[in-house]
Length: 84
Image 1 (cartoon, rainbow, N blue to C red):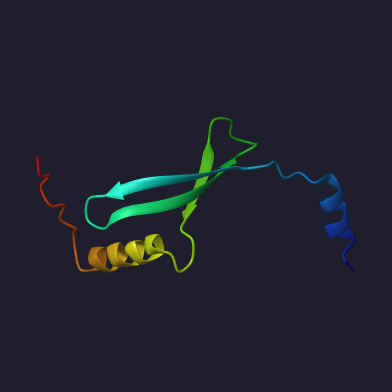
Image 2 (cartoon, one colour):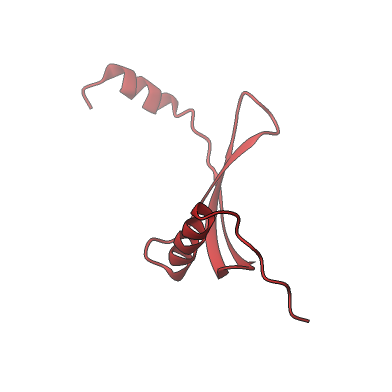
C-alpha cells in the first residue's frame, strides 16, 4: 500500500485472465490422477502458453504424483503391459 509503483501497476492491471481446467487422467503406473491446469498466454509471443499443473493438496492424486516422483527418482519407470 505504501508503494507508488505498485499502485500504478495495479491500476494498469496488465494481467489477463488465465484458463483453468480440471482433467482426469489414468496413468499406467499410479492409476487415476486428477490435475488442474492453469493456461497462461504470453502477450509478447503469440501462440505460446505456459501451462502449470497441480493436484489438490492431500488428495489421492497428490499421493499418486508423490509415488510416481519417488519411482522416477530410482530410475526409469516401467509401464506394465496392457491386459486385453
